[in-house]
Length: 116
Image (cartoon, rainbow, N blue to C red):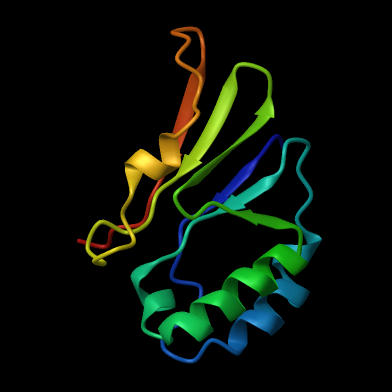
């Protein structure tokens, strides 16, 4: 597999199940160009410390969390993750695209979670 995108809502309201989810499933996924994730609205229901816990567990499992940020897994390709538009303060495309290539030859994949 070349890459995998996880689009949020890893938990409902308690952040602790993410530890087992990462250990049992996510950490076993292997991809040539990486595994990427964005947060979902349920991640925010856990509060700021819960969201940080979820992000840390995902990163510990080898998953790159894109929270209004981007990665370039290979030349000419950018994967951009923006926060959920329905969560005030989370959706910041200006920050996500800051420093992005302005080349029309760059291929971009934009990831976001919005259940509505």
